[in-house]
Amino acid sequence: MDVAVISMLIAPLILFVIFVAPIWVILHYRSRNKISEGMSQEDAERVRDLAQQAERMRDRIRTLENLLDAEHSNWRQNDRG
Image (cartoon, rainbow, N blue to C red; front, side, top):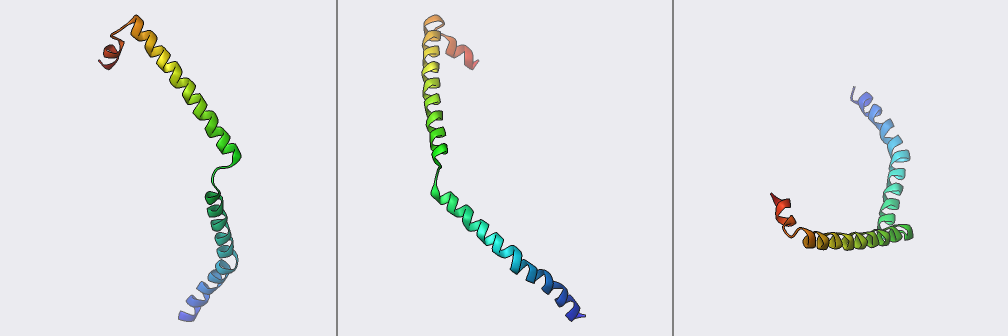
């Protein structure tokens, strides 16, 4: 009975070692290599674009706050309540 159980476990183990394990190792190290490369050119350009958009948005918010301060000096206290 022990021989039958062992032989049933050996076949899937051999298939795993021959087919699954090498593919798993290759994909693992490929993904680690991509991570260590850093950002792609497209990603870096996207980050620069987002930073520029954030700067423009910050400037717009400051302008809006200055307008509100000039027109309604207590708007900040009304917002908290």
